[in-house]
Image 1: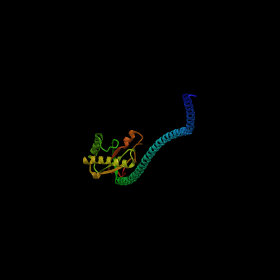
Image 2: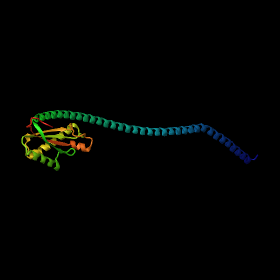
Image 3: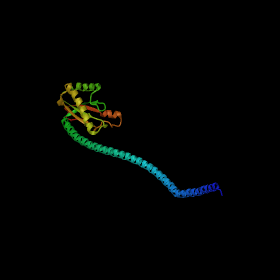
Length: 249
C-alpha cells in the first residue's frame, strides 16, 4: 500500500477513535454532573420554600405588630377610662361630703330658726295681728321691685298712724334649691325688707326678723305660680292687745 494511503487511513482511524473517546467523556461528564445538578435543583427548591416561609413569617410578624399596637391602644384607653372613673369617684365622694356638710349646716340653721321663732312668738304674746303684707321676689333674687316698694310704702303709712307696734318680717323660699340655700336666701330677702323699712324711719327695735327657708310653704311648690307665692317676705304688723285676748296669727 502506498505511504499516502496508509497515512490517510491512519488519520481517519485516529479521528474515529477521538470521536469515540469524546462521546465517552461527555457521557461521563454528564453522569458526573447529574447528581450535582439534582442537588442544586433541590437546594433551589429548599431556598424557595424557605423564602416562602420567611415571607409568611414576615406577614405573621406584621399582623402580630398590628395586634400589639391595637392591644396597646386598648390598654391606653382602658387606663384613661380607669383614671376618669377614679376622678369621677373622687368627685362623687367630695360632692357627698359637701352635701353632708350642707345638710349639717341646714340642720343647725333650722334649730337656730326654731329658737328665733319661739323667741319672737314669746314677745308677741301681748300683741294682736293688725295687718299682713306679702312681698314677692323673682327666682334666686333678693332685690325689691318697684311694685314691692309700693307695698312697703303702704305698710309704712299704716305704721305712721299707730303706736306701740311690732313688725314681724319673715322671709321664705320655694323648694327648688337645697335647704341651706333656701334658708340663706330667705334671710337675705328679709334683710332687704328690713333695710327698706329702717331707711323709711321704722325703728329697728320694733322689728322682729327671721329667715324661714322652704320649711313652711304657703303653696305646694308644684306649679310656677305656687313657687312664686313661696318666694316672699311676710310683713305682719302687731299692735299691743288692749282686749286681753293675746296674739292672733
